[in-house]
Length: 61
Image: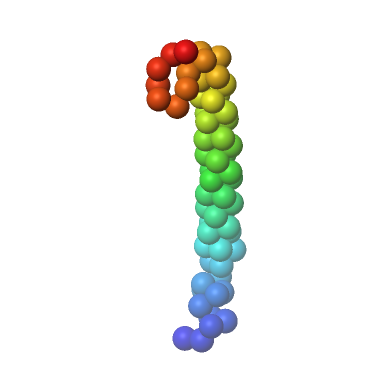
């Protein structure tokens, strides 16, 4: 077996490599969405802390 046969996958290369491509794309999008959700959650927590007048010790001012 040589590399060209391996990458051709006996005629199923489009389906196999297409599946890998779609999976990598979905994982990449998921990583970006999780990053965005985390950033928004941290921003919201920071705003809530500032609105309450809370300092770093956890005691209300």
